[in-house]
Each structure stands twice: as C-alpha cells, then as structure tokens.
Image (cartoon, rainbow, N blue to C red; front, top):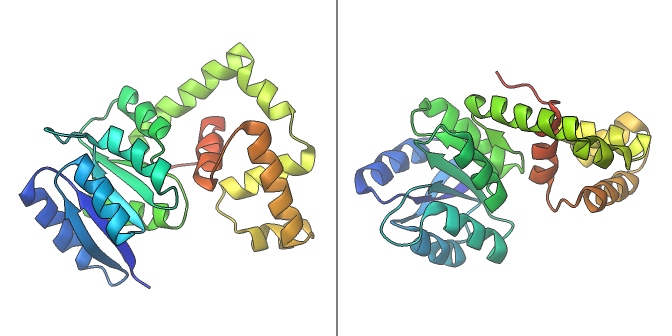
Length: 218
C-alpha cells in the first residue's frame, strides 16, 4: 500500500513541486491538496491520508499550527509532518505541543523530506537535525530542576528497558523476543509507561526519548 499524502501549502507552485516529488516515489501518492489549515482539516476528513505535509505559515485563514492541533484532536491516527522555513526552537516546541510527529525545514534536501514522510507514517518521530540541540538543552534544564528525573524514577527497571527499545524503533514483537516475554506483556508495560509519563502515542514516547538524549541524529 502506498503512503497516502495530503499537501497543505498556500503557494500553488510549492504544492505542485512537492506533488511531483512525492508522486515520483514508488511507495507514495498524493491524494489531495489544501491551500490553508481549514481546508487541510476538511480534506483530511474526506480523504483519510496517512500523512499530512503541513506548511506552518499559511495566511490568510487558519495557519498550520492551529490546523495541526485541530487535526490531531479529530483524527489522531493521521500523522502530521510540519514543513517550515523557521529554524527556531520557539517554533519547534510549538509544533510538538500541537501534536505533530515531525518537523523539517523547507531548505532540507529532497531525500530528507522523503525519509521524514516514511518515518512519521510508521509512527516514528522525525526531527530535522538542527532541532536536536534545542531538545537536548531543554532536557538538561529539566534534569537540573529535578523534574525529568522524578518522572523517570517512577518507572520500574523493566519499564525503562521497554521504553528505551521503543525509542530505538523496535516493534512490540521484537522487544518481546529481546526480553523473552510475550507481546501482551510488552503492550502492558507500554501502557503503564504512557500512563505514568502522561503520554498518549508512540511518537510521544519517541519525543520523550529524544529529550532524554537517547536517540542519535546523523
């Protein structure tokens, strides 16, 4: 099955160029286009794409940030990859808080964009390398204040093991094989971890692991 992508950008020429790039991939197809956030949410509801490629700044009308938050409330299974010109930590954190699974700059190479789409479609978080430093710095500040350590210490040793393996991209089945337990046991640990850390999705767990500094970016 091809990855179904909806492109939301207020510039027609950008939508066209992104469409040609994505449709040239054997495992992807563009199922629709939107010119603003409101239309992106409407089209997503009609077309049920796997990934919405969402421009952050789309005046006039609803911008990408607001649209991302609304879309994740109404269709949490749809992954949002934010495409932006802003290489700024303020935008990065706002994007993650809105529920986006990924963040990539418009200046990024084509291959990076394609890799990002594939990553978020699989339920993995994708952050452009320049964003990593900001997240690690934020984590260090949280550790300094004791907030992050307090959260982590409420996990059992086995839950910590499971969390690390999830963050590294292993499936529930692969984790079960590594830890010599059943898949149901892994799913149970994952549920407890998410409850204790107040997280909701697998990308949330990955973002948490990024803040912990467990994932490396090339």
